[in-house]
Image (cartoon, rainbow, N blue to C red; front, side, top):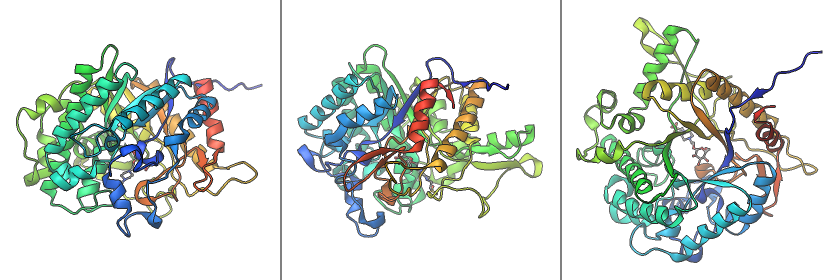
Length: 451
Ligand code: GBH
């Protein structure tokens, strides 16, 4: 008889689900919530698939208690959520909306009741439209002043019950992809210099988030950034390809990780941006470089790199037949869960890493006899977790994993068609149905092992 050895994760490994306010809450204009740049974008013809809006989403605003009950019944103890800035400051700055603050009090009460520990993202892309209209949003540092006040308010308000804070989610996605001619809100095409300026404003906000947690977070509060670094994977795990992948990683991530961990715009940044560098004040880096407690990484995919001529990193393109999710950018690269964490540990000396998102986007079919067979998602995440376990076993300090996402939700420019949930959401009836992947993930969390 052959007995399989349990493929366990470390003791106290943090398992959970991740989601974000604008993608699930709905109630986009309820109880005084202000308009966000995504509310505006969704109303701009041709910008979001099928003309879908965030107005209703998963109705989590009223259904949170049943959602937490299901989450807990699946065995999760941790939940990464975001707060909607325009719910709390409808104009981004100025008057605070008490009803918005009250909503998250109810939400945290309910999480507490269901034994769920919150991991709170301060900002997950829903910039108050008013800041965009008045100041040019991320192009202007007055947005960072507004964020500083918002961060102070939420940390003061919830600091006694929230101990895990994430400042920003994926700087790339609301800077370059919003202002550099891509498909995220506010959907603008600005110059490369302006794009770099939007990154700089974001870095300032990250710094203010860290500062707010240090000032008002109370005992045991921890804070970090969630970044979606580009992950370079060595084609072969040979010394030459590994060195090439590492050089590529340093280059690709010089706009965000380098300044945060070195406290300046250094050689890698200057090489990457050339004459289009952001304008900044020297004291900005007192904030940007503030030490953090962990780094959140959202890793879904990676790119293969080999050592070219003279060891020069050479990025390989994906052939048409390469396995890919329905989300066309989501190439199946399980090794990205090995190399992403290892690169940040080796290059920047990061001591605690959480995978704050990983999952799979497919256009799943609706339930059949109460079941949703998503073996495609299950198998992709399982492969990823195998590589995550390998990196931990090699000594990389990964402390947690949050699956994106608990339930299907508003997938930004792809609307409701693209599903990332392990729980199926019927957007007409709001019925939730756990998919095969949810039941499998339940067993993983229970066993603290790959099953
Ligand atoms: C995350 O974004 C988000 O945090 C989450 O809200 C979202 O629902 C989830 O993942 C699933 O998408 O550079 O234009 O060629 C990850 C989204 C996808 C953004 C890949 C950057 C690269 C496309 N990322 N995308 S591009």
